[in-house]
Amino acid sequence: MKKKISLLLLITQLSFAQNNLNCKKAADNNRIVAAGGSVTEILYLLEQSKKIVAADVTSVYPKEVKHLPSIGYVRNLSSEGILSVSPTLILGEDDMGPPNVIDQLNNLSVDVRIIKEIQNSNGILEKIECISNIVNVKKENKRIITDSIVPAIISLNEIKSKNETLGKRVMLILSMKGTSPIIAGNNTSGNSFIKMIGAKNIYESVEGWQAVSEESIINYNPDFIIIPQKDLHKNSNISSIKNNKIFAKTNAGKNNGFISDDGMAILGFGPRTIFSALKAAKIINQQ
Image 1 (cartoon, rainbow, N blue to C red):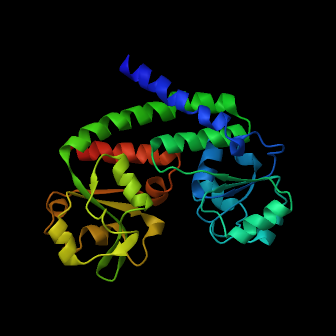
Image 2: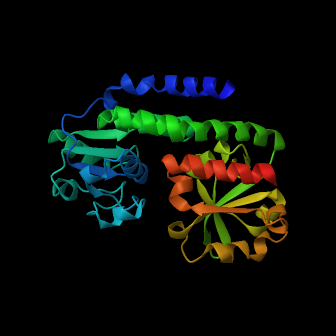
C-alpha cells in the first residue's frame, strides 16, 4: 500500500509538465537535434531515436549515438553546424549555449526547447515527462515511467532514507591532477548524486570541482569513494585511482569502499542516473 501511495504521488507531481509552455507539443518533431547526453538518452528511452538527426559530443549512450552527425559540445555550439542538418526541433539541456547561438536560432524561428534540469530523482522524472510531451509520446512515456522509472525511484528513496541515518561520508573523484584528485564540491552534479544516495559529501563546503591535497583527504577520511568510469578520467584510470597510496589511510581504502559506474550514468542526470544511484545506495547501505 505504501508503495502504491508513493507511486501515485510521484505521477501526480508530473502535472507540471503539462502546464509548462516549454513542454508543449512541438509542431514538427520529425528531425530532432539533441544537445545534451540526458536529452539523447531520454529520446532513445522513448523510442524516438530514428528522429534524431544529430547530437552533441556528451551524447554517448546508447552506443548507437556515435554514428550520428556531431554538432560539437553542448555549451559551445554553432548555429551553422546545427542548421546544416535542417532540424525541425532542437532539444537541449539547460546549459546549452552559448547564448548568442540560442538567440540566432530563435531569431530564425527554429523550435528550440531548453529542458529544465533539477538534479534529483523527481527532476529526472520531470525531464522525461517534459520531453515526452514535446515529442508527443505520452502513451509510451506512461508505460515506461510506471513500469520502470517510478519503481526504481521509490526503492531509491527508501534506501536513501536509511542511509541518511548512517551518516556515511563520501567523496567523488572526477579525475587526477598529478597526485591531486579533482573532487566534487558544492553546486556540482557529483554533489547532487551524493545527496541522491543519502550520503554526506565530505567536500560540500568546497565550491565546484576542485583539486584537493592528500592531507585533506586523510583528515576528512571518507567511508566511500565514488569514481566515474572511462571518459571522465584524463591521465588516470579506475585501477590506478583505487591503488593510489593517497587513499590507503582512509576508511574507504582500508575497507575497499570504492564505487564506480559509467561516468554519464552517474553525472548525466538522465534515466540511468536513477539506477546508478540505486546501485550506489545499496552498496553504502549494505557495508
